[in-house]
Image (cartoon, rainbow, N blue to C red):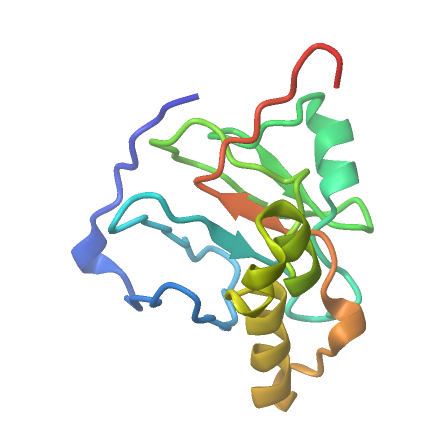
Length: 161
């Protein structure tokens, strides 16, 4: 569902441009809003969400899909945790669909999808590994890299699955 945001970007408490292939790791406090923009087009923002109080509680694609009865994420979607708690709500959306089924690209999947010569191509899982290794204060590791959302990526689901 297309829904414009009424919030003013200049009133943001933090503004950060994340270069393609880079990562951003940050704690979002209750009541704060995260705004994701695809500045150049043809990008996807692969994201992971965790509870700030307990990183073992994290975004769950399965619980989110089941609770909303829809595979597509858009305005009005409540992102659920693996403990059935709401983590975030998508309050505005000018894209209309965001993927949570396809998972994050990895070196291995890039070689299968594109070509063996693409094994050195950037992979989101590599960025996340770098993030958790460079930020031990979040107490995250490789096992914590689970369900993700690919914002700005529309992966159609056909009638035959």
